[in-house]
Length: 210
Image (cartoon, rainbow, N blue to C red; front, side, top):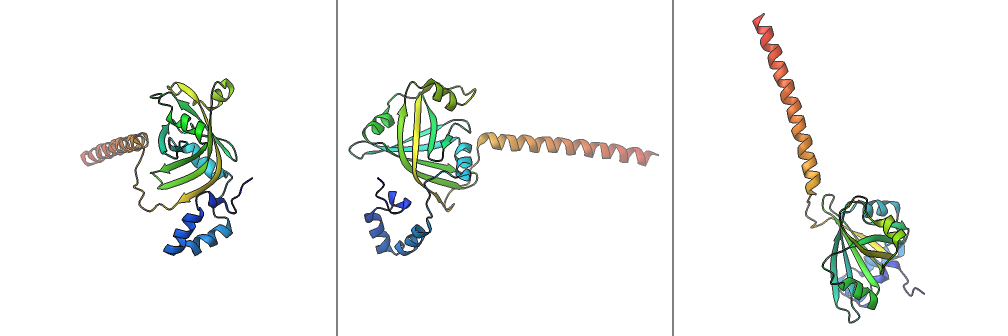
């Protein structure tokens, strides 16, 4: 049974709320809680944002509460929304420390942090996660097609709450592939314009000679 009154209580513990009250922000957040500003279900807009990402940070903590953050990446679409509460992705083979898996065995609570630097957007997602091993059908569903990485296992993340942050202080950065594509298109345009200029000069020169 969920003991939280508001979805945001997953983060706004009594201690957090006491600090908010002491520092003057509790009233504003209380109004936001009443409006249901935080959601638990994955909306279509959030699903589109999630599946467009090529990078994610997954936070876990062991049984003693020691936190750990692991980066995971892949082509756009490697994060898949399976239903309104579930995100799944292939856990590719890495350095084989298995810290995240060990933490989840001790403590299933987890956190996803997604940031889109180009559009200066970030999403925070609270929930729980579990590792799934030796499920060929699910692996085939989640493994990005044509991606040259060795799948180790699967991570399924169940959403409890999510919130978006304002863009303040997020530096605007762009993916190298996107920049390369934009520069290639610019170069093609320059080439077309130079060709048109050469044609106009040729036509103008021919007119002057008549």
